[in-house]
Length: 97
Image (cartoon, rainbow, N blue to C red; front, top):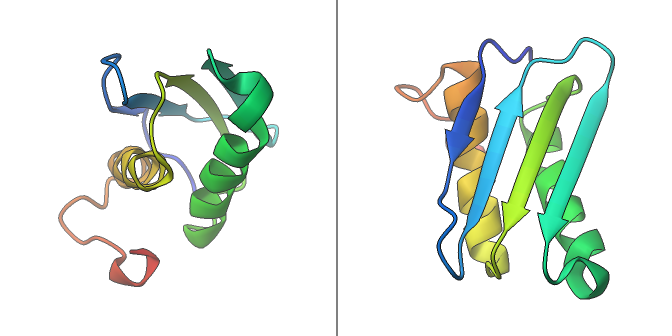
């Protein structure tokens, strides 16, 4: 699916994550900023890529600012940002949940 507009989900509070998605015509770019990047960076990026794959998003720029979020929070924030970016908030893709 094509990203229609830039979207944001999450906060910069402790134990949360902020996911920003915007259109990109040259593939997938993921930028992660996290204090725990060394320990959990691969897992965070893998979870975000998995959600993008579930929505068949192949072209996007994703900026992630992690403040110690759990995996379920990472997934939920990414789903929210993707649905906003795809403009499908009113008709969510329930099978992804």
